[in-house]
Image (tube, rainbow, N blue to C red):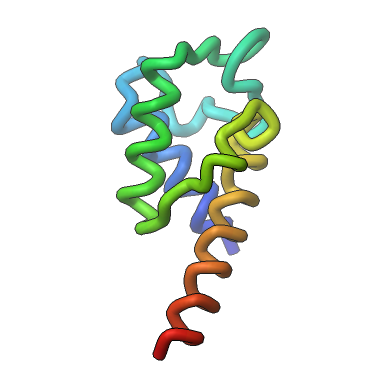
Length: 94
């Protein structure tokens, strides 16, 4: 079964960020900065915005670092953790 979070992340990068990449050639492990896609800070802010909208989360400040945004796999892991935390909080409030 394909990883839905990674699939959606790839769609954001290919469809929303306008980086002239194709879905089939985008690797989940390619670095997002040096030696890889060479994203700049403007594109990174856009990426964060798309992630927050698509997954209905707010990226915590402590997660906005180079480790989180190393590659798509590392971002997907953070998103999964954020979504799980949010679900726990919602259940606690219910």
